[in-house]
Length: 352
Length: 257
Image (cartoon, rainbow over all chains, first blue to last red; front, side, top):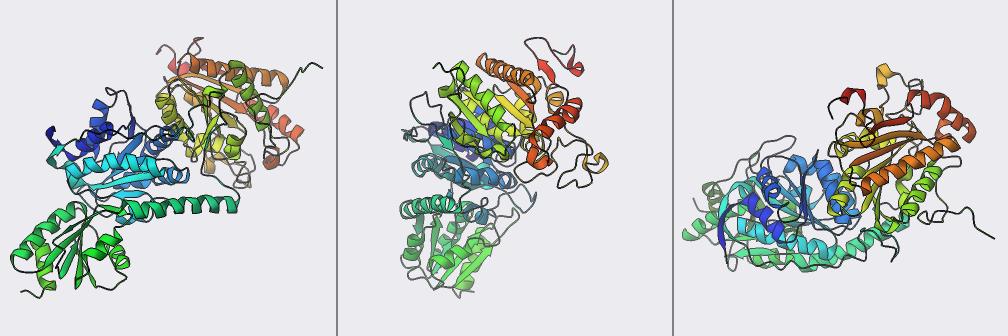
């Protein structure tokens, strides 16, 4: 298999094209810009559509229009831009459309900064727009994993007819790593039963819509969607468990922060501290079973994040608050160091 | 007995939610007549806005997409770019097109997107109960301009055809009205022209239709028609503002093309 050294943002774009993405609509924002630039070079050559929209809002609505016709569509942005997309994402979810959205997170709130952050966890898993809905959220921790996630995101979005997000960050987007592109046989899902492609006078007209003026009809549509979410919850949760078998201290971390956390866990082990790492690879659905398995002997959980601790609530919920959850994080674009995390592990392990 | 007049096939035969006397029905009808006459119902994707025509997806018998408020041109762009062989149109009101969706409107025209926009200008927000629209006339009383629109406080009306005709990407911009039989005939001709443009790949076409809103204007339907004639047409003159095929260009753009 071909092995290449690639920047995270570019690898995301290449993977999307190989996964059958037929159109990309975007708007410039740091630190995800290379993704759009790569798409601009590659997409038209591969017979797809690249279009720089007038705003993030327009870009997500172009995705809505393309996805309505059954085409694999994607947009990418970074935190402030994702906020602008939230309207369109809610409509996409409410219209049961598949789409892939990439968030290469930077610090917030407001204009925030342009350095890596994980402070959109709540937004991605709780409130990416108004109304009762979820999107699938993948949390890759390497360039290779981003590639694998993109392929999966398109497949799962199609399968469950819902939007899927890759929650990356500026570190993963900007770093270069060796990456392999597996032979992707992009699975195709038959969308002819709902897509708005022109009925050719051979079927009833299709309507892509999220409006239900009768409350009982709207409730019914939401309940149907939530039944589907239950299936997703059963099928999609994923996590990496590292040295968790006998661990007293379970470090919980995802994405770029998990790479730092893993170094700290290794150092702690070398010092004889029984530390392990739980790294969720999906944030919605949250890998509850995996956490329960990883934490069965743990005396304490330590959440390590590039935010003010947005994952802590999910850790408590998944363990029914049976185990104390401590937190160490840096925010605003500051990346925690392995030494800082090790300090926290040592403290919890009673080591001076 | 010979049938001499019937409902267009692409206009679904169900009651609409529009108020009595509203001119949406006329515009729906002539749009569907054009779709029928061109035989394109099976190859058309329509995009409805948020506003009174939000539920037009239940009335047009082609495939339909319901867009977020103001975003119909972006949704249409996504559909058209991935389906260049299909006819794509949006059907939008003045609040949708000229207030919340201004950026989408301007840029779909700058890109010369090969779609048709049907723009209903009735100088008011109908669906929400009669608030000031970007096209509300100076002095016009609405729920949110209870003393009449004062341009010093609430700005001036947006003249959409005039504005869009200055953009190079716009192939065709015409303002029509549906207050009389000759005007309705003219309106249908303009809509036909816009769809023919799309068929020929000429780029962005917009037909602005001056329409009435008897309910929110507080007028009987015939009085509403009279207001359209007496107050709206003088402020929003009818005519072709741009037609690249016929060499009609706005003054500001003269000599540039």
